[in-house]
Amino acid sequence: MDFSLNEVQEMLADSIDKFIDNEYAFDTRQKYADSEPGFSADVWSTFAELGWTAVPFSEDDGGFDGDQVDLMVIMQRFGRGLVVEPYLANVVLAGGVLKRTGNAEQKQQWLQPIIGGELQASLAFTEPQARYDRANIATRASADGDNWVLNGAKGFVINGGTSDLIIVPARTSGEQSDERGISLFAVPTDATGVSLNAYRTIDGLRAAELVLDDVRVDAKAVLGNVDSGFEALDATIDDATLAICAEAVGIMQVLKDKTIEYSKSRSQFGVPIGSFQALQHRMVDMLTACEQAQSLLMWAAMTCAASESDAKRAVSSIKYLVGTTGQTLGEEAVQIHGGMGVTWELDVAHYFKRLTAIGQLFGNSDWHLDKLAA
Image (cartoon, rainbow, N blue to C red; front, side, top):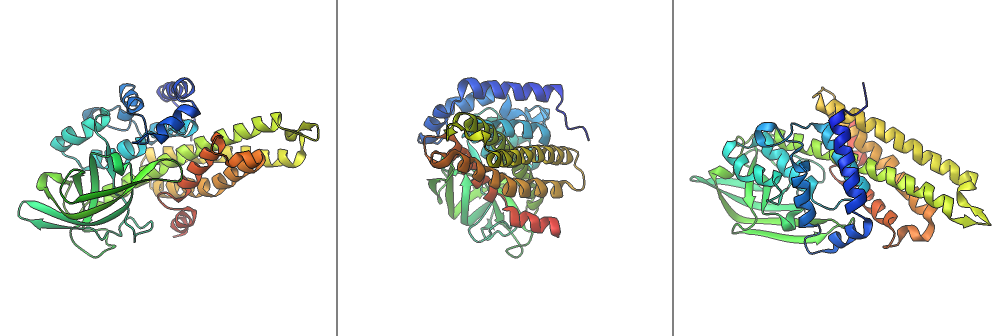
């Protein structure tokens, strides 16, 4: 398998790298993260103008026919820049469901504005009791004439507090953990009965708890076929898992580079601490972890893009790796930096927080290891 990027992907990577270097310094990122929405609307519009929000969608939908490798390129660079703009929530999660299930009218109404940067959207992919079980959905949708009435609660809706639209998986038939019987609904956040409790996560991003109390939507809000939404939901979360793994690998590479650089400038006993053999061994382990993660990430992305039979195993493999060696690498980076490694003012602490959060998102290492062993 050839792990090299094609010319278009190299150009995409270069354009994002230049944007991060020139327009997205850490202090600027912190200002965006501390704002009321938790990101910059101007930067989000720039993403749309540059075409980055259109990459994973087909040309018929207004995109560039990108695949999981293209998504990997984008998210890895976003990891390096510690980007707070809600690309994952809008493009990968909400957009991922819409591109798989939406009809022409629904795509025109919701997907096109997402691509254009005009609509904020999210996917309510988990519930408080579900842990990582994607089919464990207790939220119910009941038919009432030509309408549907939704009742239930969702936890950890990424970008939920600023979303105009939330895609809600709800059970229309079957038992609570059945894959069959799950339907997908596009719910405006200003609908009667929708309650959102927004909060800031440990990594400085934003999420919300969602409560649905007799929320009424019409038949046009149903995405795809009734009772048949799990396949699209599952595939979308797989893409999102791969995306955050790419982000994690980008973070790992930055932490490795910053740690090596710091070890050359920080002196103890009259010499740089990077000259101490014990620390050199630890930094070599960090380098090895980055190379291993990069290779496995490329293989996983290419396997998914080719729709090979072991795509799910590929996703679980890279998620397990970034959740174990990635966490260890982050801890090493903090420890070698010493006490300043956990200060708010140093970017290393924020990279580590995001890496830690990624380790728990869409299944932790133990959960994905169980999937691999099954």
